Image (cartoon, rainbow, N blue to C red; front, side, top):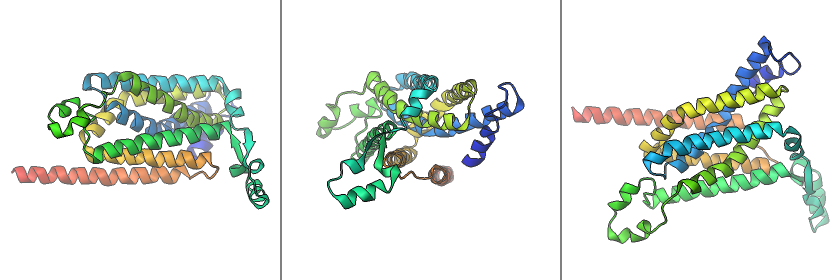
Amino acid sequence: MMDLIASSVEVAADVPLWSVPSLIALFALTLMEIVLGIDNIVFIAILTGKLPAEKRSFARRFGLFVAMGMRILLLMMIGWLMSLQSPIIELSSLAPIESLREHLAADAEVNEISGRDLILLFGGLFLMFTAVREIHHKIEGEHDDDPQMDMDLPEADAAVKSRKPVTVGSVLFQIAVMDVIFSLDSVITAVGMASHLPIMIAAVVISVGVMITFANQISDFVQEHPTVKMLALSFLILISVVLLSEAVGTPVNKGYVYFAMAFSLIVEFLNLRMTKKAKLQHAH
């Protein structure tokens, strides 16, 4: 599916901006941006879920606006963005053993480290740390998502109560950091698929608009269903592995990753439906 979308965009590379092929390219690229933005929505849903309910909507929308601004800014700096893919260091030059140097030099993708690789490496580690920490909190029963729940905890859980409350500023900072990573991936994809800057910017704006429209519904659904939230956290670990694999020069086919995520969601929705139906039957 990804290859089909990409090929439809390439048709518009050398045609006038206002034409049917360009409109097709805009639609296809917008669809691609929405798909690539799913991980961003999941990450924002997890982080903003730790805030008081009245502040979550603002944080979600602001986070997505930051993502849109970051992507447009990167699109305006295409030359600098492409320079990030140029190698800045070769691992073979640091290897102490001759055989290891030869082995590294034989694989350029692994041997050559670029600025983009370093950003993806940092982002992957940061995302994995965040997801694993949240899973640990859930397993240990630390209810940092709902401040009201902390009021009902027994005195034995005083350590949980004493933790500093999550602030909007800290959440927005984490969102901004990961927006750089997610925007980098999204913009590089857009630059590789289309040549008209207005089409790329329009696709980013439309896709973010779609995500803002449904961000609250998606985030609320994740927060209301603990099993879905755990699944979303697992998705973040999966995405972090994809980022790390790209950083070290052995990228994973994202089509497989998106298929695995979609299949897991379908199974989870079936489980939720079965549970809801069982509760209704029990009530009657």
